[in-house]
Image 1 (spheres, rainbow, N blue to C red):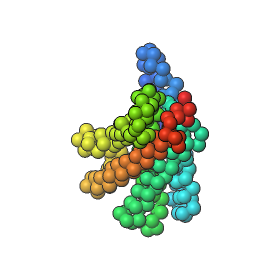
Image 2 (cartoon, helix red, strand yellow):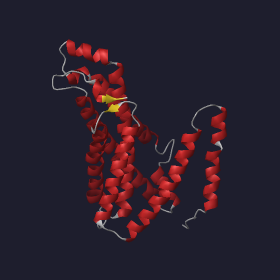
Image 3 (cartoon, rainbow, N blue to C red):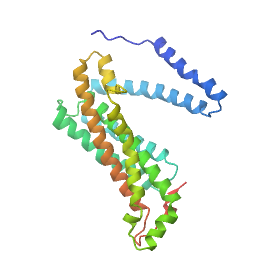
Image 4 (cartoon, rainbow, N blue to C red):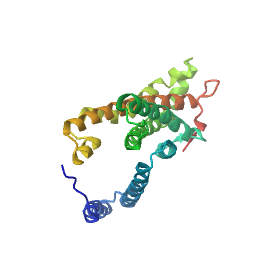
Length: 264
């Protein structure tokens, strides 16, 4: 199948659709015109830059380059997790909890997939390693951000309930148990919805991209199933780890609720 190449004019036509939202948002007073334009500009610049970087990396396969790019992706994802929370843990905890959880979950799942399941040679082949890690980090980042935001917000709003439970003799884990479970559930809802709707409501991005690039549909489906399962595992383990660490941080060694450890 012949690959159809897009021209700058094709991309400009698609950009006009986004620009058409600006006057509409201004008229409706949605206050999203500026963020929308900035996001569209960032998307364009960031993807063009990463395309150039990946072109160079694909031409010079080396584990050191792959590791440096992976570390940069992890640090930027950790920053985005922290930036999306209305109330976040103060100090390095705000950045460290999400980043460490993504490192343990996403990197472990990616290594498992590369070495055991897919098996490219070498195992860190950037054609497989970078896109796979990017998809896992992106989805795990969303799950952790949602879960941590819900955890800190609910802890702040229900502080009287938590302190009442502590006064009745419950330990910190039981006192915040309901909030912790709801936070974990909230972080996992997006990937559960994505898996439930895949193939019925929507065609996932990786599968669509492979089909557009000329891959056989059945082969694209097999890769998409693999990716969905890996994303679910990475998001699940990452979310659980981040929420457990975050909820533990909200209490001191005397099991007192410490909301002064949150930064508004």
